[in-house]
Length: 290
Ligand code: G1P
Image (cartoon, rainbow, N blue to C red; front, top):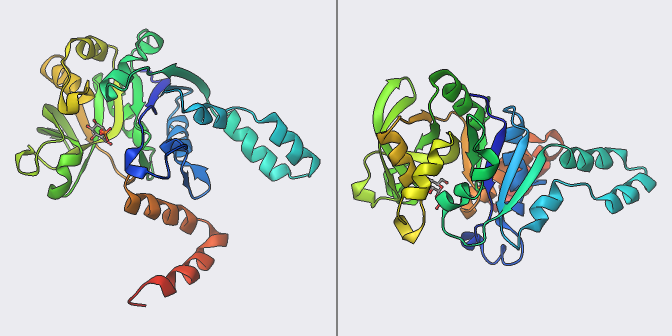
């Protein structure tokens, strides 16, 4: 399975992050010095993907602009001799081929994926990455799924264990562990009640799918929250040709959760040698037990 394209749905309202997201797409909120969506695109690029398909709405053009040239700013930096910054912004413009598709009605994640049907249906497989989930580790998260999809020739979804009291925020799976950290999926439930979840294995926003998913998405009825749920289409896939889940290794931050968003900022800033000690010095007095 050769995965060259990724679908990144970015048409959501970002209501969890209001008022910050009143006029700024949630995907453009900075995590340290980059907008959150740039980390997701970099994860895709580092996994051999070239084409990024944004599923957008009318208020999200700043995402496309971010991955395009800004000639005016380039001229200003050039004149000021700021070569390093110039290289930095050009590199973002050149990192991927971007395709934008309007999701004209917000009918759910499944519907967003369906909007990209005509662009990916001729491929053997394609990736879907949810812009709220930032993953970091030795191997890019989506690469871990691509490796399994290529060897097993089946669609693969990424999962991570979450605490019992949080299962109602995710799609939850149950299945049989066929090799360490790899499951053949039996059941998927979108946002189950805390005491009704089949396990604590939550779907993280990383998927490697085949065009077969479109037939399922076209057939299913609206599910949880009245939306066309990708999770429900994946149940059809699991019942038919089969579906695997891979426990993703690495760290995950949900940028829609303020505690995790702020932690992600600190995590990235701490990676910077120049910033690390200053940051710790500023943070220490803020801790009540210091
Ligand atoms: C979506 C999926 C859900 C998954 C989650 C991961 O939910 O529907 O199955 O667990 O992404 O971030 P959303 O967060 O869009 O409500």
